[in-house]
Structures are given as structure tokens and as C-alpha cells.
Length: 336
Image (cartoon, one colour):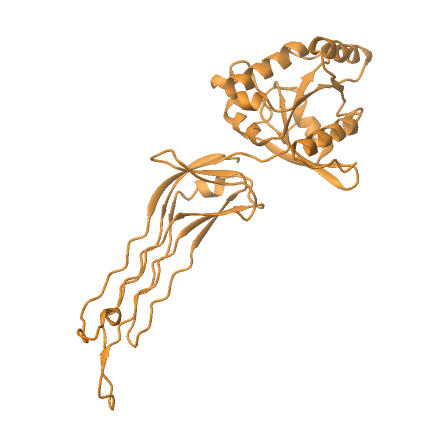
């Protein structure tokens, strides 16, 4: 199951109490206060992991409580601080304060960490209160309480290329043909119920990360259909690839399909609509579909790449062009 939003409660550990103790030993003429300080409570830390691709595991455990620090001891022994509680989340997770709606952090890359609840400070033992005029203090401090916070986690998948299209446009078939991803492929709409990410090999030495998103329909930006929940995943993509079905079995004319997709992206985000984009005509396997691909290019006033995921025609050329465009957007020179 794919989960891209959830709400959790985190509670950091309480600091250990300071110790009240006096040194009393045989043959020690002068004793004195020797109560140690308490240990620090554990913090709650979220860490991005490359081995996690969904918030499902986090959502199943909505409450996270870190350990308390140990109290101080006699003989000036400080209490042991508790180890931080580290919660793994997928790379690309945004963390919001659920009450204020404030963005606390964006864990983009694996290894990124964010302390979301700080552990309480340990209290001071009576040894810390000793002075030249107050040599036998009986004062101690309790440990501070750890922070508590309600968080809303939102996952936005990271991919270099986002595959956008109407239902049955051939996105899943294309992704499965160029990568080892195994999205569901069938001849009925809405077979893709959650985003799929695949890595395609481009040339000999480079790769391209592609995301197959659930099909968009008219009104997706307003909440219609399945795709509206996943439009946010397109926001991290460098380049958008619009796939339009030009086969005889297409439910919608290719030009109308591209217009619908562009319109929904513009309604959702002007910034997203301004991303570089290419158009690929899918299921081009006969002269009629090839002619429709040419007509689509003429109507759009820009090149349209004709591909067939089943035969592989035009696929490698499309990947090479996407790779060049992505590298340009990332400010790097193409490998080939």
C-alpha cells in the first residue's frame, strides 16, 4: 500500500532529575555534596532513507515517544543521556507543524535529518549548587520535560521526469519497458492507483529517474478523479513528459488530451506548468497512428516523439532527449 500523507505525534524524552547526596565515608574528614546531574532526554529525529518509498510504516504507528534521561547519582555521577529516537521516512518527505501549518523541514536526499522534538535538559544535582558560603546545599533540579508536537508528513516523490497523461495513455507500459519497475498494466482506465518510480538506463554510463503518476482527467486540479491527489509529486520533477494515445482505441483525441493535461497543470500551479515539457505520441504501431502523431505535432507547433513501448520504436531516442533536457535543467553537461 502506498501512503503519501499522514499525521503523527512525537514526544521527546524528559531529562533526568538531579541527585541529592552527601559524601560520608570513613577516614574522609570533610564530606560534602556529591549529587550528580541528570542525563539529557532523547530527542525525536526524522531521517530520510533511500530504502523506504512510502509513509505506510510511519502511519501505522502514529505515536512516537523517546526515552527519558537517567537521574544523577551519588559520587558526582551524572545520569546517562538517552539515545535519540530516529524515525526513517522516505526521501522527499516534507514535515509540517500540524497545528500551525508551518513547514519545519524538507528531507530531500537520503541521510538528511531533522530534529522535530528536542529532549529535555537534565536537572542539576546538589553538587552544582555548592559555593564557598553554601557548602551543604540541599537544592536539586528536576529534569526538563521534552518537547511534544503534532506533525503532518507529506511525501513528494523525487524524479527527474514525470510521466503525465490521461488514463490508458500508456504511461505504465512505457515505464515497465524502460526500467525494472513493475506497474500494473491493463486495458482499462485507472490501473495506476499510486505513483511508481523507475530508473532507466541511458547510454552506457547514465540513468534517468522517471515517475509514473495516476492518470489525470478534466477537473483533476479541483479534486476530480484519482490523479489530483498525486499532482504534488510532479512538483519535484525537472521535466514533464506528456503521453498522448494516438491509436485507434484512444478514448480522447491526442490534441484534446494534451490540452486537458496542460490546463490541469496550469490550474494546479503556474510554476509547475512552466517546467520544460515534451510530448510523446504512444502506441504508434501502424501508418494511421504515425499520421496522427504528425498531425499532433503540426497542431501543437512543436516536435512530437512517436514511440511504441511494445516494439521499442523511438524509445531510446526519447530517453536520450529527456536525458539531455534534464542535464541542462540541472546545470550539468550531457554525458553523451
